[in-house]
Length: 111
Image 1 (cartoon, rainbow, N blue to C red):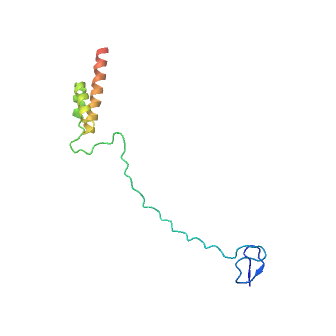
Image 2: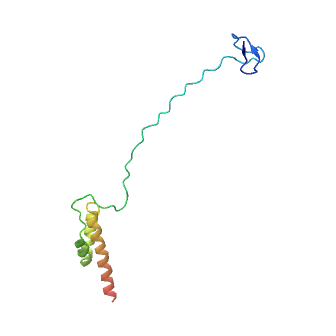
Image 3: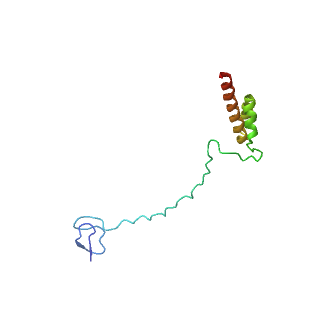
């Protein structure tokens, strides 16, 4: 003897459906859970934006470029535009020199 899985009344062992409530006595097969497989983590190298220095060994970023840019601002501006991608440190110095030279020139004219 066994008991109905729905109403709990006693029934014969070979019975497929309960004679009292009509519930099926065949338990549904439990689905086999597939193991969860996590994908391998994707490693993404994030390139920083903005000015980060230079990997070019020839790009020393010498102060002399700033002095040249300050003395002749148009040269500093041209050097900045030419070097901004290939030699960012030197370009920055030349550009800063050009800005300083321009500001000093304007201040000299005002005075």
